[in-house]
Length: 130
Image 1 (spheres, rainbow, N blue to C red):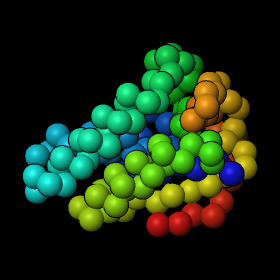
Image 2: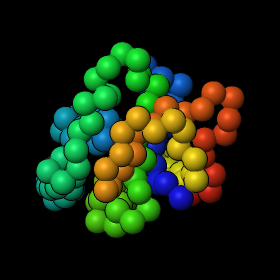
Image 3: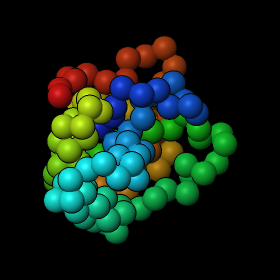
């Protein structure tokens, strides 16, 4: 099962909810975290940026609906995302972890993640947890 962390805010460019990266950047930039949490958040964001590819396909207008999912075997990236999710949850962002066997039409894939366009009219996620 592929794993995604998302908040409650709707994306402007798709029908999906904002993912953990957009929300983590928002919280980081607000500047109202205690120093120790800010350091943890920045450390985890920087680790993920260093170790995960930023797929160029997401820059294309035709892929505006695409969203990212972790491969289940991407243990370290998932643990970093869970750390970020805990900080976001603690500060009112209400992050949920969702899972699916079918992320949609895959337009990018590497060892840690897939980027896929959700299939229209089909439930994308199962097993929501918080």
